[in-house]
Image (cartoon, rainbow, N blue to C red; front, side, top):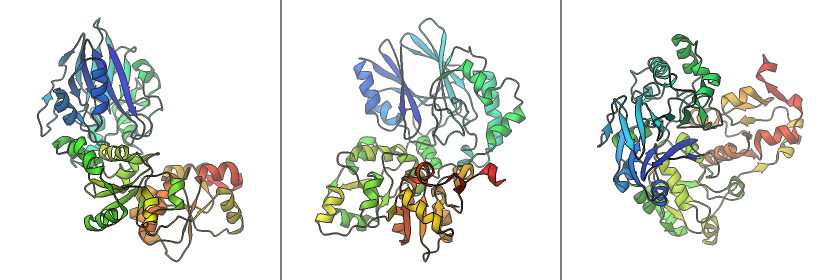
Length: 473
């Protein structure tokens, strides 16, 4: 028996590859199919099952595409009603895979169809559970996402279901059972997951707040529904895509997106299609020189989640500016979260654009040390902190106004075009994204602080310039 966790850091998502005696089960695959097909081929094995723990909100699954290519069977748990052919398993149903078995445990709570897969080894011993978004390491799945699709299913109702699922289906299992969750820290599908992506049930019973043995149902519901932040706006759309199956093959999406365009073709396509130009290069390169009207979201950071948070139309045609050779990677990562309409990329990048005699722009940027000097002599300086509100509350710079990137569209009306604003985030990524968006909307009187709060705190500013929640109370 072989178990492999295939972890994708950008989405903090874990898919799983299980092989026994030449048969393979894939759990919660991402959009691209090649990684799973290649692994099976390397093991001289056949993919028999594609198991889905639930209808995902934070990514578009590759289950339909993969099942077609591998001639495999898609499995969902009880109550699932997708608009395509699958096997909806019964609670307690056992699936044979080589010399091992997989038992279906219906564990509603994150969603109504949420299912945990219990793996028995060759000796018949309970070996591992693949919990999807039911149980994470240090946390459990949030119960409020379904309400974005079905308003009558309240978070409190689902939290109650989750309490029962954990107590009746998961906690009675042996402490030695390995827990393989669907996500790790950084995913918006939970609140406070640990950085580890594998644990044992015994350790979770000991350290996971939601599995405390003496916890009352009412206490559990309050704990898992408290402090939930608004999920990224693309989540409901991804649920619908996974439910209906109305998605194109990843192969077609890549083919359509990998069209190399000259500067002239790029410009005419941009205008004709009403496309968004997305620049995914390193932030240091973007601030020095970029094409006016383009938006920066760098591929080397939390790319897909920020695309999903900020680009509200999943059907928006997208033109790319990438580092050479990374076009397919960017197209694939966009498709993972449902942005399937990439229509080409600028061949030769910004250099080719300049050589064609076309204009470029830049983001005014200063270092943390330069800003520290300015800050010391200008107490009324207009300073924006682009981090999330929770980060700002934990500690921030005196006089800084919290202007979270997450809610930039909501807060645009508060900007005064006649004022100069200095922008920082934690490390410099989000402030460049924000600066690029503001530039496209005609706000030019902005300055990016390189290195963000981390650099300001460690190298430039005095401790007395900082304020935390505790010192402000």
